[in-house]
Length: 491
Image (cartoon, rainbow, N blue to C red):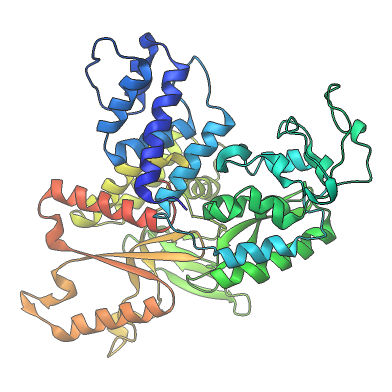
């Protein structure tokens, strides 16, 4: 494992080395500035790498993380590209920072997984070299040499010139002729032995991998490009049996060639059940709803349909994003093209459902701060969402049967997580300046109830919005922390 400080130091050195290797002095500063690294005076008689190491040493931790993510996404220089090895090393260190230098998938689970592969050609229909190249592009990252995978027992030897560049299935299939596998004429036939799966993975350093890289290995093993259908399902079942002990599971997310593609995900800890309808952006009169099919719970708004929006698409496997919401809006309006006008119309409609002041400021700040960073992947912030629904008006009941019906904001995030955000005004706990303990008690009791159902509930006090500059900082900091919690990249 790598602790956070070591990962940051690794990134500081790696960023300096990459830029120094790829750039000349004339282009170096443009790349440095594009990555958001600080300016430093260039001392006389100093090389590129030493200068850049001074730059990265003076950069803050957040500036280093930001620069590393930018390099992963798109290197701004024009003189070359990052190698797969450099990308792997940057990604691994970012993962260690993200996980605070810890592993959630234990060594016991990793050992048991490797041992369960013994006797199986887990690389499926692919050459082993090709299989592993998508998992760990740099097999030397842990100081290993593929020659060490070969058992030395019984006089068997390993030629050191055979390395990762060649198809090392030669180490695993003793029935094939060596000369049909090697591509270098100068390599003479020599003895070799099959490799045990646990030994191979151990020598590749899989016990020291970040959880994300270990998950890539599992996802690759069960990918339909690698396995035929029956074997894939057996391996998925086997993997889930082991992963569940650490709170993970393989979950079907897409398909390829008619076969499922699986991703390792946290086992669902959010709200059970999938939302069928989301009634939101209410602008006035309560919608009058009828149930067309009580078995399937199909609903229809028969009056005041123009006063709310009803999202009726199947829930996504990941986050409900702004892009998905715009596409639904376009379909809802019968539009054939999704353009900026469509996006602006939806944004205007959502803003109309919010009260001026803290609610609108909260919505606008979120969009302005995070839309440029996340683009189409921005999680949708749904305003004025009905969590409960009483078909009768308040005047028709002597006593309300629901503590509240609408939420100020709702976000549907990955792993079935639903985030409720409330902006509390004085009306939440007082009336005409007089405290109402009973009203406050009902509110917090309802919070407890929906938390136990799996919702995350976050409240903001109206006083937090008195200073607009401080309010914006508070909102941005909150969403940065929320996205970090749910593994959403907010760069």
